[in-house]
Each structure stands twice: as C-alpha cells, then as structure tokens.
Length: 113
Image (cartoon, rainbow, N blue to C red; front, side, top):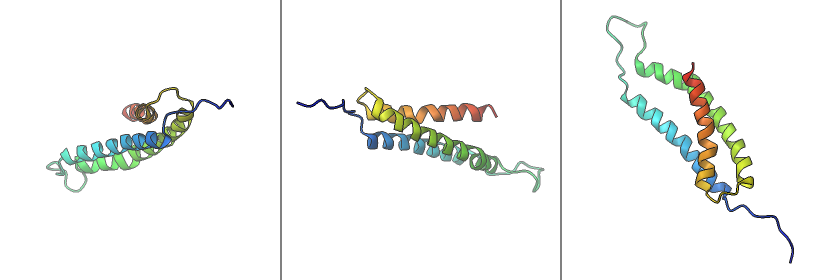
C-alpha cells in the first residue's frame, strides 16, 4: 500500500462556473438597473446635459468595467489558491468565496469614489 496525498473533492471546473455565474449576475443586475433609469434629458439643459442612463453607462464603462476586470483577475488567483488547499467539499462555496470577496472589495472602493 502506497501513501498518496489527500485528494481534494472540490471540482475546479464547478467552482469556476459558480464564480463566473456570480460575475454574470452582477452584469445582469447592472443592465436591469440601467433599464429602470429614464433616458430623458432634464428640461432647460439643451445639448449640454446628459441623461441619467448615459451617465450611468459611462460610469459602467470607465469605472465598473475595469474594476470588474481587476476583481476577475483576483478571483482567478483566489480560486487557484483555494481549490487545491481547501478541506471543504463544496464547489459552490469555494466559487462563491473566490468571486464575492473581490467583488465586495471593488464595490466598496467604487462606492468611496
């Protein structure tokens, strides 16, 4: 009988899919939020003012998109560290931890702007 290292029961693929699901949920929530904003320009502004929707779209493009990309890179690194070393057998928990912690940090940083 040979001794083998303890194997991790966490599937890296399943944890990755859970992590991607969280990122898709954030993108869909932002899209739904944009759908609730009015696209009308306030009266008396003329061509100088932007609508709420266009301002939020620009915010999403220039602030949220780079923050999400950075959070995705941190999540991939966290996932690479968590999958082989975890004692937990839940791929959903590992994927959620690797996605939610960097997203929460980016959300706090973005909210402080």
